[in-house]
Length: 263
Ligand code: PGA
Image 1 (spheres, rainbow, N blue to C red):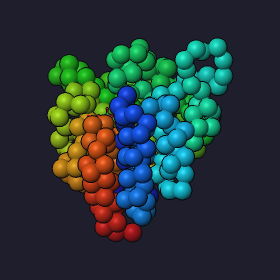
Image 2 (spheres, protein in one colour):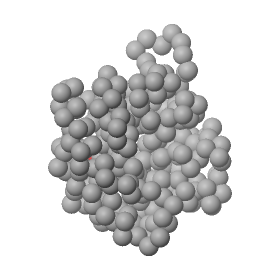
Image 3 (cartoon, rainbow, N blue to C red):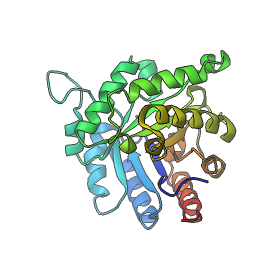
């Protein structure tokens, strides 16, 4: 059972999908049907250009908005990039950092992810830092080694006081967009290792407060089993977050499970 101190967090990663009208409609639907659910944090991550209008649409709700990436510098000559403070300015409260698609296609490095996490905290954004092994790494029994290396780099510049703010998303690359979810037991094994490592770095009490999301083919029909694992505190949802019904079902089921916990 999760300690009640860890409030589940569900984030919809819309990636490079949805035009503005569709994003606004989806945001409205989520706001209308999830705002009364107070036991979970709900976040949507639209394309950067839609962060401002979506944040406006959600302004009277507790639904958060995330950007999908940021630069690590506070300002400067970095054509095409977004500073964390500019993302904050547009109304976002969160930023996804180091998603495997960015690592795979856009050359993101472990070190860069650490710098971006630091920059996000400096701008008072909640970083959702993504880590996860490829299929080849899993098959070579290197999962924990890879995840630990990525984790250490992601939180390298985070202080003990800041650590509980950070969200870590464990997303095995082989489970993203493939329909192949890690089993709850496989995910829990890695989540427990992540929490243990965070405990070595920040102390056990702090590690117990850090939220660990699972991501990779999360759907309405597997969220409950995933959330029943002790160290899974939410989900980063791709494909299933693009449809109101599936995302709202994921949120609603998680909220019901959270409410059912002993206080
Ligand atoms: P998926 O994507 O749910 O479509 O597998 C998850 C993610 O990439 O964050």
